[in-house]
Length: 199
Image (cartoon, rainbow, N blue to C red; front, side, top):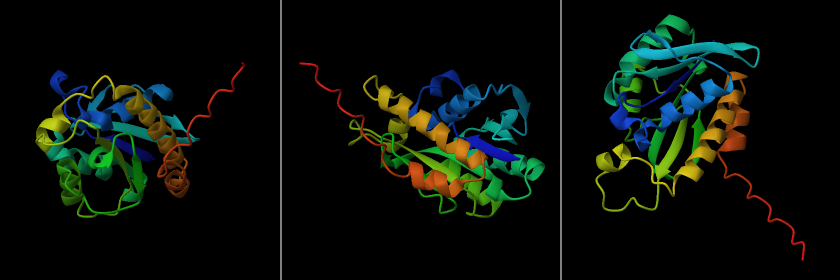
């Protein structure tokens, strides 16, 4: 089994916030494969389905961001033999808006949800997908206020295209091809070709 965990905060107030982009990606992946994230277990909402001829569980912890590790530890202990089969999707203020970074391991950085997971699992050796949320409007705003604000209307098209790319990267993870996901999605997408002039 592969376990995809999208980080976020429960509640309508947070639903469209930058901090909840991990949930947005988890929901988009579940929609693509008709997985219903409807089961309440292990302090998370989960759903399970078949992807790339294997079983994938998608989870959205309900513990609030700073205690994400409590839920992830329960899920990992219940379903996985190795943390290599876990990938955590989360927002990253240190990356430009829409930028993706996939790594097989690494430190938690400044993200409190990831700090909680690293502490709870007692290891940094598990894959993660960082989703950049630092837009042009980020300047003197307090970090906490910025990530808890909603994406602006101007940001949404780029956010949606990057959510779609993140889903494609997770498909490769589900296939057991994390290296290909890194090679393909850690670089910027190719620009769309200009339409040929008909005049």
